[in-house]
Each structure stands twice: as C-alpha cells, then as structure tokens.
Image (tube, rainbow, N blue to C red; front, side):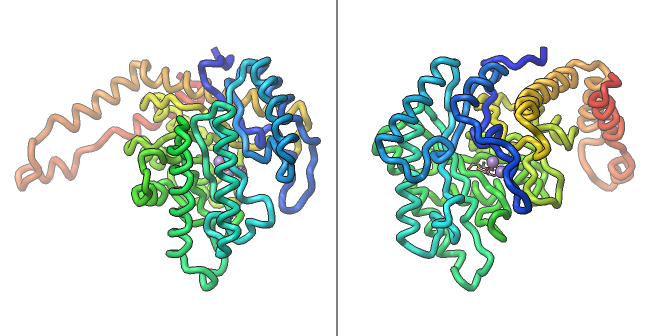
Length: 373
Ligand code: GLT
Ligand code: MN
Ligand code: MN
Ligand code: MN
C-alpha cells in the first residue's frame, strides 16, 4: 500500500537527492551524483520524474556541443528508466553575477543576461518535455533598501516575467510559469515573499493566464504562515501550478527537511487539501537529506519522502471513512444549520453559549495520526 507507483506522480529535483550537504559553516560531505544515476535510482524507487535547474544538468560554461551531448545522454537515461521531466527551472542565484539580483539587479546588463538565461532554460524544458517552468527568485531581494527603490525592483521583475511569457507564446510552447515565493535567505529580504504577494503580482502581468505559483511548505513556515492556507489560496484562484513538498520548523533558517518529518498534523492537512481538491500536478519533493547521511541515507531519504506522502494519504482516506470522525463532522454541520435562524436579541444567549465540538474533532485527528484508531 505504501509502495510508490508511477501514477502517484512523485518527482524530485536533481538538486535534492544530489545535495552534497554543504552549509554556510561546513563543506560538502557527499560526492556529486551523476544526473543519470539519480534518474536510475529514483526510477527504481518508484518515482515518476525528475526536475532540474539548467545548471544541475549543464555547467554554466558548457559549449553548445557539450550541452547537446549532456542533454542527449540524459534523455537516453530518462527513456531507459521510464522517467519524465515535468518541470524545469533556472538557476538565477548561484553564480556571483547574480549577487544583487537577476531580474531585479540594478545593472541592466545583468537583467538582460538573467532573462536570456531563463529563456534558454525554457527552451531546455521544452526539449525535455516539461510543461511547468518554475522561477524561484532567490536573489531578488535586498539588504540595503536605500540602494534600490523596491518599486523599480518590482517593475524590473514584471518586465522579466513578461518577457518570458512572450517567449513561450511566440514559440508556441505548451508551458506555464510557476513563481515560487520565499521571505528571505539568501537575501536579507526577498521581494514577493508569500503566495498572496505572488498572486497579486501575477494580476499585474501582461499574460497572467500563463503564470501561477509554486508554493513551498518550508517557505510559508519561514514567513510564519500556515502552508495549508497559502496553498488553499492558490487553489482558490486556479493558480496552484506546482508544489514543493518539504518540512521546516518555524523561526529557523531554511531547513528543507524531508516532507512530513517534523510537523505531522500540518503535513496531514496539506495532503488532505491536495487530495480533496483534486490537484493533479506532480507531487514534487524539494528537500535535502540530512548532512549526516551517506549514499545509503540519501536513498532512504527519497524512499521515506514518498512513503510518508502515501502514509498521509492513507490517513486522509481513514479520516473520510472513520465513523466517529464522520459523526463529529455531521454534528458540527447540524450545530451550524439548526438553532435560531438569525442572531438577534432573542437568540444572543444561544449564539454566545453554543460550542463547536472542535476539541473532539481535533483529538480524533490526533489519535488517528498517532495510530490509535
Ligand atoms: C533552491 C531553493 C528551492 C527552489 C529551487 C528552484 S532551488 O534549492 O531552495 O526552494 O525551489 O529554483
Ligand atoms: Mn523550493
Ligand atoms: Mn526551501
Ligand atoms: Mn532549498
């Protein structure tokens, strides 16, 4: 029951299982994994696909001949192991060129370079069969607001995304863009820090139809928000184009913990929302194995990510079929629908005194997750 199948649509970024455990205080602890090895191993574990940044596959300075050779070899591995690439993204944060931003760099030359790099990444995505292009603007932010007017930054950001949708339309690609918000790290503050800010920004774009969001659980938590509500707002506006599943303790640095490993009730409600809403995009893991792990731990991480999702999905099924839980939900509905039809002077006492039965419901959910039901 907890064995992942291709039609569960689990995907992993090359940079996730490929993460070498570098952090701001310590060096890499694991060797680089070849993209083709990652494709093979994840396929064996039951994953559906792989996602990547342009430079996870193709080094920044590759010649076009090298690029083509790498892409061909990668495509061969995808075919051989029955894996797809539903999403591609662009690295606009690693190279020092982007230290003051990419689309929002104060330097027009850097902005142009960033846009061209993103267009090439979109072309790569098209070549690999991707239908989603994620933009995570990790360097689009500031430490010194005196150096750059945030209104200019937003206008440049808009211009960047408008150019990309124009590119997609003019090439007739079947591709949509998903913007990924994050409040901070690596910048002191990142522009457009939440799903809500992204959605409002999308409304100002030339081609809003082509642009949605890629919420990440950890990023919502870093902003002190409830990921369930963030994701729900995206769904409400038909803008949940993609999702980054991981975990995070609140008020910490970016941890990228394995999905469902820390906040168990939170993960349950995220899976419930995704399953109940009929979200049918990829279930994409954007997390890192612990720095303590060797290669074996890396695949344990991948296996665990998928297994946990399926475990939560099973709990959601139980939630919907548990007689006692259904009973409490029915009672809650009844409490809301019966009783005085209006709140007025004659019914004030009733509305002030009535209970909502949420303690009972919450305890049942807690016991469900504890395996006590
Ligand atoms: C980076 C970041 C993630 C983004 C990736 C896409 S790269 O690892 O921390 O949240 O989703 O650019
Ligand atoms: Mn992410
Ligand atoms: Mn993250
Ligand atoms: Mn990350």
